[in-house]
Length: 228
Image: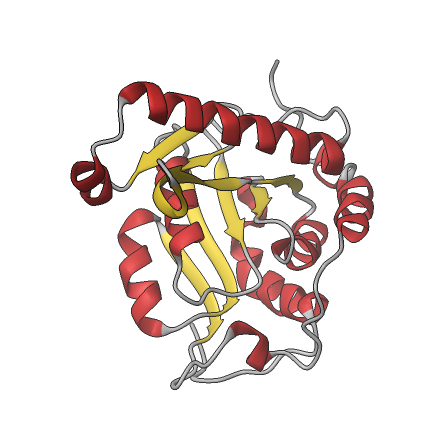
């Protein structure tokens, strides 16, 4: 499924190459979930190729009391937002349930703000019973993706597939129990950094995300109308 090392011109090129590998899911009417911002140009190409609905999945770290950079877990956005706690850190620091709840609400508010900025007033797509393809532009340590997959697993999905252009083999092995399948085009060794495997790895701007999400809106409508 993955060559030891493959190079990508840019995120669009990576998305098109991934889409070719994901075509087997076309008939499943998948929902493509992009991790913003870098995952969005990759996911857009996949959604276009599969004529699939595209949505964003926001993951926000829950900071420890007095040490915001230390994560006690994460909150994963969606139709039914999920909290994923790092049980080991929570045991060590023993933050109060009230603190955890307040921090969760603070990060959900930030997710709502970002979703409003990127998606205007589009609510998250309901994922229950759906095949979901989670997309990023690459994985290094996998912390965010791990939280995203763990959160998505709590939703009653039909199937959960992780799709990334490039990632280290050991990280993928750690993530594989959290999903039904992984499509990764390149597993270089040594890995270095995600950006090292792209000719152009400029930051994706907010404006680009907004424009791509607008352009993707009609993709899934031809094939799938969700039941309200």
